[in-house]
Image (cartoon, rainbow, N blue to C red; front, side, top):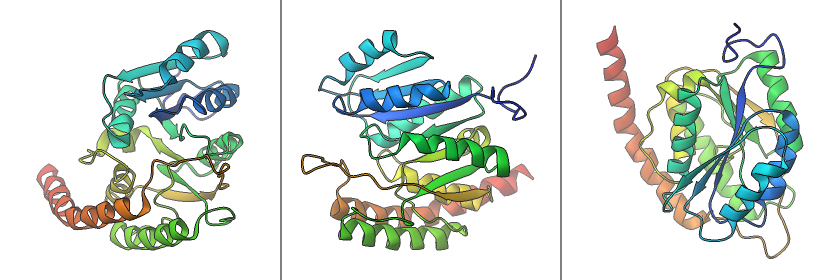
Length: 252
């Protein structure tokens, strides 16, 4: 029997498409339908949504081909906790890894093919989708904050990471199993990159498009508030790094 988690010789190795979602009933249906063409399991963590997200997900279960797995949080816990719930499920069920994609439609689902190609070609532990080859439509303040935070995280992690705030990623089983996460919200994505860098995992960057909708589009990211959280994370990372290397020394 082939272990799909480790076999990359065919197109059958299991990579889950993981979608954390909070109040994205307007967009998530379209995102899931587009993802279904890749014939990979789609795992949605509905993080205590209070809109029609739950109803949309229930309807999609019978509409799309392939496996749609819905995990519900009773209350909103934050994106980091939603990711951790999905990661735990993926590790327990022996997937090769996960491609994370946002539920709000800002990511071009067609580019999942680029992630799959990169996995087969270079076998990275972690892939980050970078929006900086084409920043058209990205607000200036967000572009500046992303450049600055990406530079800081790259320096601390010791790896070049072009877009630390991008939620479009691939993480293999080893990364999901071995990195223990402390944060709960959007800073979880930076925490993953820091710890992956310290553990010397292979991180690659691939270009992705930047998609912004019309005026009614609202992101859950608050540039000012989340920048403050980012600097708190940087200071906390000093403690994390010391603890991580102490643990590594004990294992030797």
